[in-house]
Image (cartoon, rainbow, N blue to C red; front, side):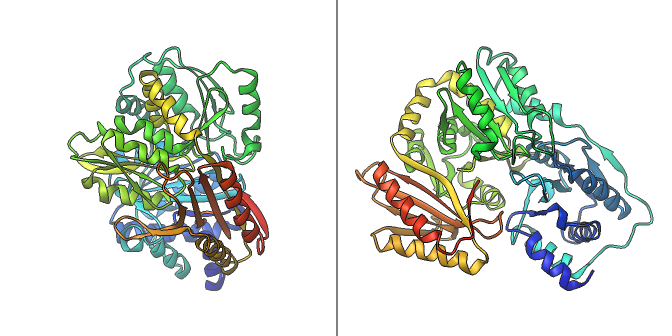
Length: 503
């Protein structure tokens, strides 16, 4: 391998928040080079001698997990591992319990089955991403990868320590949610795991709670027979939607992505429940997680329905505009926890929470905890949920969609042209958070939601997890304004695009 080859591969391998690539492009030697770079970072920057290696259901995960276990052991690391596929949420739980380790989750989230990748966290689940984490996080690891930096083989192999944290994770989620055995008896839900890795923990938790469920695509299968494990894709969940039409006696349906760290919610009658509604509904319950906080804040991304965002003020909570990106949000939650920020949501159905481990604040994700809290709160406060649903249904929305471009220049040009078009129509552009730090995207808005009879909010950004993709999302006061906004975006954005994108 030449340095030029490795540098070119690095352009496709390293992304803003994780490592992700078509598995066919990551051969054995380059995978070894990647593990070498991570090992150097772990020992010299993080000062740890233990790693946790886990994988999701992807077919490429078998060989990469085996290679990783062998490689880190030969370098003298103690290697903790769960040999069966697990969800990213359970992986984060294990990282938090183990404490001073480097965690490597092998998988590729909602991407098609041919992809592979890695999510990295440091001791106590600190996020590691581009310019996030000690010494620059992934930025430093990328440089080590390009340089081919490696540790010497150890004189003594490290131990391989198998873990099994599923039972402990399920019990912890039940405890955090305040759900006692059998207390949710009578609730009826449908679940679609899209052949990913969240089924075992979620079904065990709902079983314990007494929920009656119908579970679909429960066995992890890296072939992903339903299609890409992305619940926003209509073709992937089409069979489950058909099932719901034929069997309408359910309270909710929950659909998961491939590694189980995002969950879409569908209410009775095939009503999609927006993630910002879910967090607004759970906000009073989350406040009790941090009873000593003088004030409680919740983060919402630029795509959120502003009526739902503002609704949490009625609970004495403060909404805050946050950037997209799981590592950015987790870093923000830890930094702002002292100011009362306890949870956040992305409209992609990722939920972020802060929990205490050994006196430390850890920012993590747990779809099982979210579902248990949601069902418990719904049983106790149905009317408040229905009131929020009325707020959601009082506006018009087009969920995130986008276009693919041949290069970053064309993508940037499209984003700039769209923004200029709306600025010329009287929209304002918000590009920073409340404290002045960059948002990483643009929120274009006109009118004041809840005050003006006519208003609209447009989110636009460069995707950090897909090559060459720009994304848009629109929420508006009425269908006519929504259609105008979408038409303006499509007319401009499609000009230099080489394809459309959803997901």
